[in-house]
Amino acid sequence: QVQLVESGGGLVQAGGSLRLSCAASGRTFGAFAVGWFRQAPGKEREFVAAIASGGATNYADSVKGRFTISRDNAKNTVYLQMNSLKPEDTAVYYCARSYFSDSLSPASGRYGLWGQGTQVTVSS
Image (tube, rainbow, N blue to C red):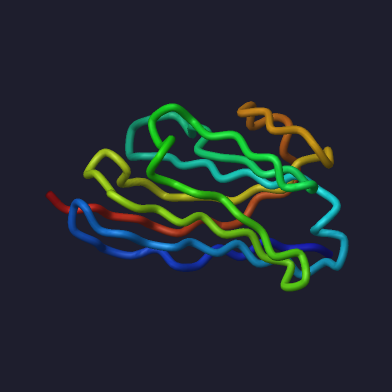
């Protein structure tokens, strides 16, 4: 059974950087689009970024120019490089595998496999 495991979260000061990783156990991971979502306390889960199997990307307006999503299919891993972090970026970050290869949709319903999440805390 394919599983997704996020890592790389932690505590960082505003303006700092973190790189999140999403590692998959299945060999077909590269055939699917992958997204990152986040959920802050008391708020709904929101879309952060997505990357298609071919490498096309999509970002939420709130992270454009600061976050970069990438993938290494040989390692079955998707990354989220987060720079210029702000306190409002504080949330649990989840990666998710799409049902589709090239969908960059921000809708969580388009993603069928989710990781357990990793906490990112940005202090002011």
